[in-house]
Length: 394
Image 1 (tube, rainbow, N blue to C red):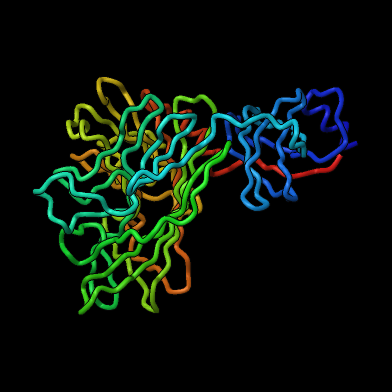
Image 2: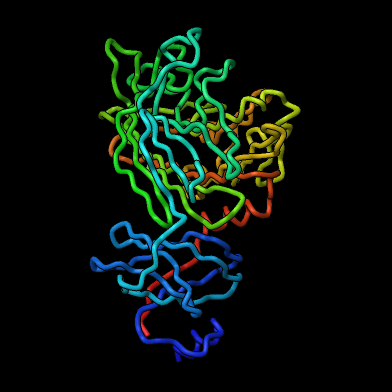
């Protein structure tokens, strides 16, 4: 009965015995969707095959296997055969590669640069910038598949803006009020500590990094938070966009909580290309159809910033995961500068308590061309509601 059901759903005429991954699309059409499931490869090389025998790369992190599902219509399902066959596994091409270049990690997909992660602080771009603004532990520049840059670093109006970065603004720690965002005030800073694991592969590549939120409001510097980033860049075929995730896990570094007061910004920030300082060259679009004029402080599943760079239209969208605190999180869209961030502190005071992890999850979509709301809705559904996948025997 199970075999007959599988055949009717896939249109196949014959199925070999063995182990299969059964994938259910759910309510949404799927295209180049990253899927994970649990399977023990037992030390051997493993890949998938569809009913036509097409090779599908698998990548393992322990017993978590990941692959890219090319196409599956809403309400349908299919099975993919698990193949243990080292001798006949074809060479893998078109994956994700990482290289260390001085103080940076450079990440490429299919030979195209996606972004640089600035690890140890480098040098300031201008002697006019005070040393207090020097920072590491952020992402810049971010490229589109056609090689245009969508972020900025050390902009003259806000030297503390750095491509894609994380920081908290109005805080309370041990009775004092450090500001880890506006570092020019000298009350707080974020120190890059180290890069942890790095990896590449046919499905995704990435790294972990570690930062410290240091309060400067006491008699001596004191770490308030420890932060770990898990960054993953995906190879999703020849699409006009790149996709990558950041999971930031924050924990108190002592027995003291970090209190976040109600405030209009703080958290994950994105600074757009320098050309977009000209307001005629940039626009914002949210999942609710809001723009710069009416999108500030609106709770949104995703937000896109884009405009012209070197005469071509490009953009970057950030997708807010539904597991995030207070999701969908309200936005801070700056009225004049090409910048936005998701700011849970807009909804009132909260705190990060000792012994409890505070996790922030975001997916980034970097594209050539104007914003495509239908595409971003589909990608958000992939992120928030991935297809079900499980291993079955036949």
